[in-house]
Length: 155
Image (cartoon, rainbow, N blue to C red; front, side, top):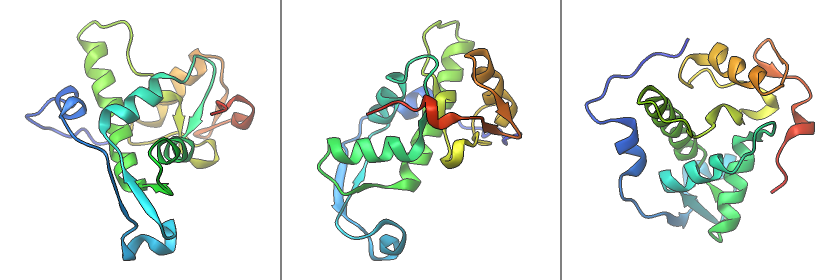
């Protein structure tokens, strides 16, 4: 199960904190994994908005999110570290919203790691993500969605 982080700032406030997206040259230390060119540092609300576009029954990988964000912002790549953090913030904010009684929350559980794997850092860990996915008709075995490729959104 994922460790619970304690913070005085709500996850919703972190998600909505005013920030500008930045497009910067890929830092030298990241060129081996990301290549050269321009790297997007996305805004939290942009990541959240994309996740909200994934319809019930469909899935998306974090790399698909990164690729679309890069295309939308005329960048070659989106920072993998920042994107992972922002997906986590969106997930935690969604759970705060659910606890507050909101019915429409960001469906973060539809975002998978590469290979169709569930994300242990989401609220409730792999078990909670698997439960959400199974409620939407997916089959999860050993922390991985079976035949996830057939259910990926086409962006």
